[in-house]
Length: 279
Image (cartoon, rainbow, N blue to C red; front, side, top):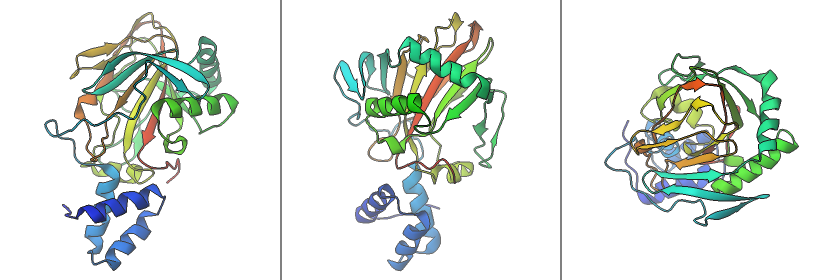
Protein backbone atom coordinates (compact mmCIF):
# COMPACT_ATOMS: atom_id res chain seq x y z
CA UNK A 1 0.00 0.00 0.00
CA UNK A 2 1.32 3.43 -0.91
CA UNK A 3 0.80 6.01 1.81
CA UNK A 4 0.82 9.77 1.35
CA UNK A 5 1.52 11.86 4.44
CA UNK A 6 2.70 15.39 5.00
CA UNK A 7 6.05 16.42 6.49
CA UNK A 8 4.63 17.10 9.94
CA UNK A 9 3.28 13.55 10.31
CA UNK A 10 6.54 12.07 9.00
CA UNK A 11 8.52 14.16 11.49
CA UNK A 12 6.17 13.11 14.28
CA UNK A 13 6.64 9.46 13.39
CA UNK A 14 10.43 9.72 13.31
CA UNK A 15 10.59 11.53 16.64
CA UNK A 16 8.35 9.02 18.41
CA UNK A 17 10.07 5.97 16.93
CA UNK A 18 13.37 7.43 18.14
CA UNK A 19 11.83 7.83 21.61
CA UNK A 20 11.06 4.11 21.63
CA UNK A 21 7.28 4.30 21.27
CA UNK A 22 5.69 1.02 20.25
CA UNK A 23 4.38 0.48 16.74
CA UNK A 24 0.93 -0.28 18.15
CA UNK A 25 0.73 3.01 20.07
CA UNK A 26 1.78 5.01 17.01
CA UNK A 27 -0.83 3.36 14.83
CA UNK A 28 -3.49 4.03 17.49
CA UNK A 29 -2.48 7.72 17.66
CA UNK A 30 -2.60 8.05 13.88
CA UNK A 31 -6.04 6.45 13.73
CA UNK A 32 -7.13 8.97 16.34
CA UNK A 33 -5.76 11.68 14.05
CA UNK A 34 -7.90 10.58 11.15
CA UNK A 35 -5.84 7.88 9.39
CA UNK A 36 -7.31 4.62 8.20
CA UNK A 37 -5.83 1.82 10.35
CA UNK A 38 -4.26 -0.03 7.41
CA UNK A 39 -2.82 3.22 6.03
CA UNK A 40 -1.41 4.12 9.46
CA UNK A 41 0.24 0.69 9.80
CA UNK A 42 1.73 0.99 6.31
CA UNK A 43 3.05 4.47 7.10
CA UNK A 44 4.79 3.28 10.27
CA UNK A 45 6.37 0.35 8.44
CA UNK A 46 7.52 2.64 5.63
CA UNK A 47 9.09 5.04 8.11
CA UNK A 48 10.93 2.20 9.84
CA UNK A 49 12.18 0.62 6.63
CA UNK A 50 13.10 3.59 4.45
CA UNK A 51 12.26 3.89 0.80
CA UNK A 52 12.65 1.18 -1.81
CA UNK A 53 16.21 1.36 -3.25
CA UNK A 54 16.47 3.55 -6.36
CA UNK A 55 19.77 3.41 -8.26
CA UNK A 56 19.09 6.88 -9.72
CA UNK A 57 17.48 8.62 -6.77
CA UNK A 58 19.83 8.15 -3.80
CA UNK A 59 21.12 11.49 -2.48
CA UNK A 60 24.41 11.53 -0.62
CA UNK A 61 24.37 13.68 2.50
CA UNK A 62 26.93 14.32 5.25
CA UNK A 63 28.46 11.15 6.65
CA UNK A 64 28.20 11.01 10.47
CA UNK A 65 31.73 9.63 10.88
CA UNK A 66 34.45 12.11 11.78
CA UNK A 67 36.35 13.56 8.82
CA UNK A 68 39.60 13.63 10.84
CA UNK A 69 42.40 11.40 9.60
CA UNK A 70 42.81 10.10 13.16
CA UNK A 71 39.55 9.42 15.00
CA UNK A 72 39.41 9.19 18.79
CA UNK A 73 37.04 6.26 19.38
CA UNK A 74 36.35 5.70 23.08
CA UNK A 75 39.68 4.19 24.17
CA UNK A 76 41.69 4.10 20.93
CA UNK A 77 43.07 6.39 18.25
CA UNK A 78 42.09 4.97 14.86
CA UNK A 79 43.51 6.08 11.51
CA UNK A 80 41.48 6.31 8.31
CA UNK A 81 43.46 5.33 5.22
CA UNK A 82 40.85 5.58 2.45
CA UNK A 83 37.55 7.44 1.97
CA UNK A 84 34.97 7.20 -0.80
CA UNK A 85 32.05 9.58 -1.24
CA UNK A 86 29.89 7.36 -3.48
CA UNK A 87 29.17 5.04 -1.82
CA UNK A 88 30.10 6.40 1.59
CA UNK A 89 32.92 4.06 2.54
CA UNK A 90 35.89 4.44 4.88
CA UNK A 91 38.83 2.08 5.41
CA UNK A 92 40.34 2.12 8.91
CA UNK A 93 43.53 0.48 10.15
CA UNK A 94 44.11 -0.94 13.64
CA UNK A 95 40.52 -0.76 14.85
CA UNK A 96 41.42 -3.74 17.04
CA UNK A 97 44.89 -4.63 18.29
CA UNK A 98 46.39 -7.97 17.27
CA UNK A 99 45.84 -9.22 20.82
CA UNK A 100 42.17 -8.21 20.78
CA UNK A 101 41.67 -9.98 17.43
CA UNK A 102 43.19 -13.16 18.86
CA UNK A 103 41.03 -12.92 21.98
CA UNK A 104 37.81 -12.50 19.98
CA UNK A 105 38.64 -15.51 17.80
CA UNK A 106 39.50 -17.62 20.84
CA UNK A 107 36.25 -16.69 22.60
CA UNK A 108 34.28 -17.56 19.45
CA UNK A 109 35.72 -20.96 18.56
CA UNK A 110 33.48 -23.10 20.76
CA UNK A 111 30.36 -21.07 19.86
CA UNK A 112 30.49 -21.28 16.06
CA UNK A 113 27.45 -22.53 14.16
CA UNK A 114 26.58 -22.57 10.45
CA UNK A 115 25.66 -19.01 9.39
CA UNK A 116 22.07 -18.16 8.52
CA UNK A 117 20.19 -15.48 6.59
CA UNK A 118 16.72 -13.91 6.76
CA UNK A 119 14.41 -15.19 4.02
CA UNK A 120 13.09 -12.12 2.20
CA UNK A 121 9.68 -13.69 1.56
CA UNK A 122 8.88 -15.44 4.84
CA UNK A 123 11.10 -13.66 7.38
CA UNK A 124 12.38 -17.01 8.63
CA UNK A 125 16.05 -17.51 9.43
CA UNK A 126 17.77 -20.38 7.65
CA UNK A 127 20.90 -21.75 5.97
CA UNK A 128 21.53 -20.99 2.28
CA UNK A 129 24.19 -22.09 -0.19
CA UNK A 130 25.55 -18.64 -1.07
CA UNK A 131 26.69 -18.01 2.52
CA UNK A 132 29.25 -20.62 3.50
CA UNK A 133 30.55 -19.66 6.91
CA UNK A 134 30.27 -20.43 10.61
CA UNK A 135 29.36 -17.74 13.06
CA UNK A 136 28.32 -16.63 16.51
CA UNK A 137 27.01 -13.51 18.25
CA UNK A 138 28.08 -11.64 21.36
CA UNK A 139 25.32 -9.79 23.19
CA UNK A 140 25.76 -6.06 23.64
CA UNK A 141 28.45 -5.48 26.31
CA UNK A 142 28.35 -9.21 27.16
CA UNK A 143 31.74 -9.19 28.89
CA UNK A 144 34.48 -6.59 29.54
CA UNK A 145 36.20 -7.18 26.17
CA UNK A 146 32.96 -7.02 24.18
CA UNK A 147 31.83 -3.95 26.09
CA UNK A 148 35.09 -2.19 25.24
CA UNK A 149 34.73 -3.10 21.57
CA UNK A 150 31.03 -2.18 21.43
CA UNK A 151 31.77 1.25 22.88
CA UNK A 152 34.77 1.80 20.61
CA UNK A 153 32.85 0.82 17.48
CA UNK A 154 29.85 2.93 18.48
CA UNK A 155 32.12 5.95 18.90
CA UNK A 156 33.90 5.26 15.61
CA UNK A 157 30.61 4.96 13.70
CA UNK A 158 29.18 7.93 15.64
CA UNK A 159 26.01 6.01 16.38
CA UNK A 160 24.32 5.40 19.76
CA UNK A 161 25.48 2.26 21.55
CA UNK A 162 21.90 1.03 21.93
CA UNK A 163 21.33 1.25 18.15
CA UNK A 164 23.89 -1.48 17.50
CA UNK A 165 23.03 -5.10 16.84
CA UNK A 166 24.96 -7.79 18.67
CA UNK A 167 28.51 -8.22 17.41
CA UNK A 168 28.70 -11.07 14.91
CA UNK A 169 31.86 -13.14 14.39
CA UNK A 170 32.26 -15.27 11.25
CA UNK A 171 34.81 -17.83 10.14
CA UNK A 172 35.25 -18.83 6.46
CA UNK A 173 37.34 -21.85 5.45
CA UNK A 174 38.83 -22.53 2.02
CA UNK A 175 36.11 -21.95 -0.59
CA UNK A 176 34.00 -20.01 1.91
CA UNK A 177 32.23 -16.98 0.46
CA UNK A 178 29.17 -14.74 0.74
CA UNK A 179 27.77 -13.84 -2.65
CA UNK A 180 26.65 -10.29 -3.51
CA UNK A 181 24.04 -8.91 -1.11
CA UNK A 182 22.75 -5.81 0.70
CA UNK A 183 23.18 -5.42 4.45
CA UNK A 184 19.97 -3.41 4.73
CA UNK A 185 16.53 -4.98 4.54
CA UNK A 186 14.89 -4.15 1.17
CA UNK A 187 11.51 -2.78 2.34
CA UNK A 188 9.59 -4.17 -0.63
CA UNK A 189 10.23 -7.71 0.60
CA UNK A 190 7.53 -8.85 3.08
CA UNK A 191 9.76 -11.19 5.07
CA UNK A 192 11.72 -8.28 6.47
CA UNK A 193 8.82 -6.55 8.24
CA UNK A 194 9.32 -8.26 11.61
CA UNK A 195 13.06 -7.64 11.61
CA UNK A 196 12.70 -3.97 10.71
CA UNK A 197 10.24 -3.55 13.60
CA UNK A 198 13.06 -4.31 16.06
CA UNK A 199 14.90 -1.00 15.74
CA UNK A 200 14.10 0.16 12.25
CA UNK A 201 16.20 -0.13 9.14
CA UNK A 202 19.92 -0.83 9.23
CA UNK A 203 21.89 2.32 8.47
CA UNK A 204 25.58 1.38 8.36
CA UNK A 205 28.01 -1.52 8.70
CA UNK A 206 31.51 -1.97 10.10
CA UNK A 207 33.39 -5.14 9.10
CA UNK A 208 36.54 -5.83 11.12
CA UNK A 209 39.11 -8.33 9.82
CA UNK A 210 40.42 -10.48 12.66
CA UNK A 211 43.24 -12.21 10.79
CA UNK A 212 45.45 -12.00 7.71
CA UNK A 213 44.07 -14.24 4.96
CA UNK A 214 46.64 -16.19 3.01
CA UNK A 215 44.81 -15.79 -0.31
CA UNK A 216 41.37 -14.45 -1.27
CA UNK A 217 38.55 -13.37 1.03
CA UNK A 218 38.33 -9.76 -0.18
CA UNK A 219 35.22 -7.66 0.41
CA UNK A 220 34.16 -6.59 -3.08
CA UNK A 221 32.00 -3.55 -3.88
CA UNK A 222 31.44 -4.17 -7.57
CA UNK A 223 29.53 -0.96 -8.35
CA UNK A 224 32.24 1.16 -6.72
CA UNK A 225 35.04 -0.82 -8.36
CA UNK A 226 36.79 -1.41 -5.04
CA UNK A 227 38.05 -4.55 -3.31
CA UNK A 228 39.19 -4.52 0.33
CA UNK A 229 41.84 -7.08 1.24
CA UNK A 230 41.60 -8.61 4.73
CA UNK A 231 44.28 -7.42 7.14
CA UNK A 232 44.35 -8.13 10.85
CA UNK A 233 42.76 -5.27 12.78
CA UNK A 234 41.61 -3.40 9.64
CA UNK A 235 37.96 -2.46 9.17
CA UNK A 236 35.73 -1.18 6.40
CA UNK A 237 32.80 1.10 7.19
CA UNK A 238 29.95 1.78 4.76
CA UNK A 239 26.70 3.71 5.11
CA UNK A 240 23.55 3.10 3.09
CA UNK A 241 20.73 5.03 4.81
CA UNK A 242 20.56 8.79 4.37
CA UNK A 243 18.63 11.50 6.21
CA UNK A 244 15.79 11.25 3.64
CA UNK A 245 15.21 7.60 4.45
CA UNK A 246 16.65 6.40 1.15
CA UNK A 247 18.78 3.27 0.74
CA UNK A 248 21.96 3.17 -1.32
CA UNK A 249 22.10 0.22 -3.76
CA UNK A 250 25.77 1.00 -4.52
CA UNK A 251 26.68 -0.66 -1.20
CA UNK A 252 25.87 -4.11 -2.58
CA UNK A 253 28.94 -6.20 -1.76
CA UNK A 254 30.29 -9.73 -1.62
CA UNK A 255 32.78 -11.73 0.39
CA UNK A 256 35.06 -13.29 -2.22
CA UNK A 257 35.98 -16.99 -1.85
CA UNK A 258 38.88 -17.85 0.44
CA UNK A 259 41.51 -19.54 -1.72
CA UNK A 260 43.99 -20.46 1.01
CA UNK A 261 43.94 -20.34 4.80
CA UNK A 262 40.88 -19.07 6.66
CA UNK A 263 39.14 -15.75 7.16
CA UNK A 264 37.75 -14.37 10.41
CA UNK A 265 35.65 -11.20 10.55
CA UNK A 266 33.60 -9.34 13.13
CA UNK A 267 30.59 -7.30 12.00
CA UNK A 268 28.58 -4.54 13.65
CA UNK A 269 25.31 -3.36 12.07
CA UNK A 270 23.74 -0.11 13.25
CA UNK A 271 19.98 0.46 13.25
CA UNK A 272 18.06 3.69 12.88
CA UNK A 273 16.59 3.42 16.38
CA UNK A 274 17.30 1.52 19.59
CA UNK A 275 17.66 -2.17 18.72
CA UNK A 276 15.93 -5.03 20.50
CA UNK A 277 17.55 -8.44 20.03
CA UNK A 278 14.25 -10.17 20.74
CA UNK A 279 10.97 -9.49 18.90
